[in-house]
Length: 167
Image (cartoon, rainbow, N blue to C red):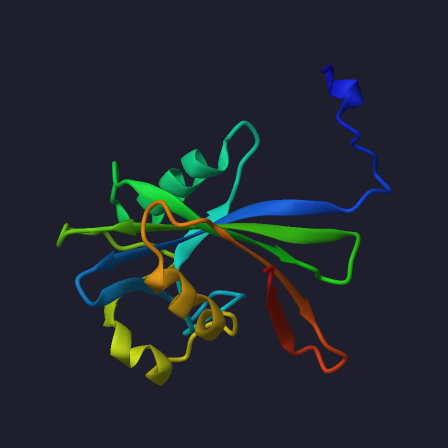
């Protein structure tokens, strides 16, 4: 199929692709506490990740982002799910969520924030980004080979996040 048949038109709904990665080891999950000077999620905990660049597939982008933010390379990652974030605008966000297992490897600091191994039982005590309390339990129960989830996130009339999982 030629590029002209891909159906790309400015009036169609579009999404910006991003990756979100969660590494686990034993009973811990690696989270990034956003740097205090960040515009988004300052001092809040999230997974690592970022934008998919032109010419990258989502797995390569996830591996690149993981390396850039942690210094970790060559870890096997698996797709846990996809999330479409309806921003209410003509362009939304598409998030590809990955998970991997990690041994106690040395990580390097990043300008994005501080990396911390958090015990799963402590997650509810932390200032998490608002979708993590909904996402993390599902992600942490998943094993390689499980079918990926599909979710849609939007906002109510009070700008509060809503997340709906398909199926």
